[in-house]
Image (tube, rainbow, N blue to C red):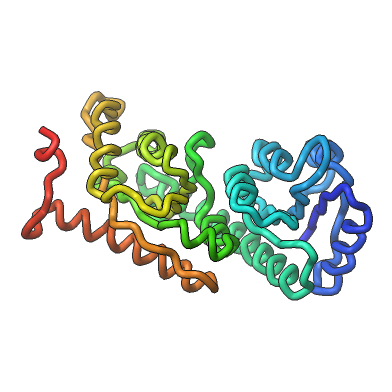
Length: 325
């Protein structure tokens, strides 16, 4: 795995190279500023598989560098590990919103940095395998007349203006938050109702349009509450809100639904999309290992899916459209 480390401290760069080599990653290039790093990346002579960016650098800090790197098409999904002695939640939030994948705190712990690099390598390999499988599946689908080159369950990339990060990054975000930060956070899921029918009828462009419209509507409601969100596939969005006490989920659901109704989204042929969403009750996240965090996400998803089933006719179901009208 080819790594690019960026830090204005030459001693830190030397230390990173030595520690990385010690844990099995010897191919490390270095840059002493964000400007030098961007010049190297835009030159395209070397393609990197992973980045290590210090947050606190003069002129261009690591968060700004992260944002610029994500604008380069070849590096939209490349793992970016942020290096920092600053653990305040605002820095963590800003870094992940800019596109960070993971965090390592200073002073460096050899085993921790090694674990983060191994996780990044696994992510690189998994994405390479997924890309190959997707290309093969896409060719087969096109050959058989299928509309989409992607599965409904795929974690598709949506526009850059809706505070969306990857599912993996959202897991790492929760893992990075301090206990005090977690105490003020809640996890919830938003599900697009009848997503299977939309997937079958919509073109690929229309399906991406649906995801973007819903993500925008969620953002309008949750942005004042402070949130970070990931699209998890199957029409499901996972949110981590920094507000300790959210409004009841039914009110949040109605607020998102009102916006979607006002948008009046349509298929290209003029048929209405009739987008509806279900929001499950929020959950306090578990601290600790990623497995526990993923279980928290699974529980949040289950609550949103149960809400959908309830609206479809279970006893006591609440029809939010009827409630509003």
